[in-house]
Image (tube, rainbow, N blue to C red; front, side, top):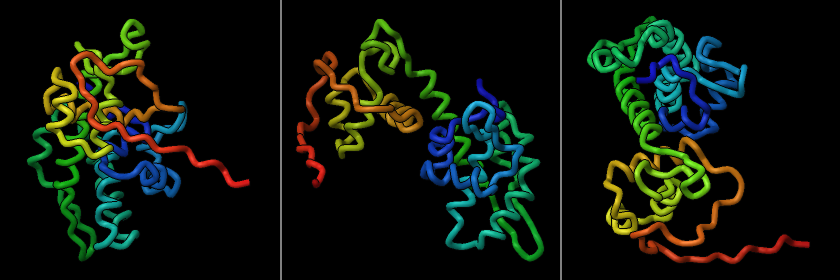
Length: 217
């Protein structure tokens, strides 16, 4: 199983931290994260454990000043870096209190949430396959021909879990949830693929067409 030392792409880190992609880029550009959590060697990457600190920084913005949040991050960085995935479950039960002068902060909720979401990301990666023999390599749920981005698009369009399950009867709620998470962590580039036909056993959830507006001259 992957360790917390794994480096994540910004989109993946945003999913694990449950923040916007721009927030992850801010954490890098504004030096909210120290250099030990960042790699720029092959595109932007952040240490998986840094997601806890990113989540804390942006979620606590209404209650703490930037200086207080940065100080709490600096006080906890060494311990965060030392945690490995294999011992993460036991760390969820540990004391994650950070104390500085008169300020006391409990990072446990952020440790717990990001640890669970990282586990979901790892599970989603294991569930999704990309095979040139299946829909020209489109990422699909293993053992099916269901594109994960199509599942995510249905949920994003407002379809309920029940409607999506009706559209893709080969998927359970867990597969649907992980499909959406995988698609968010791995956004499609370019124009969306237009399927020639729906996957076997699926039904249309919605069929709304929006005309393209012409640019003003």
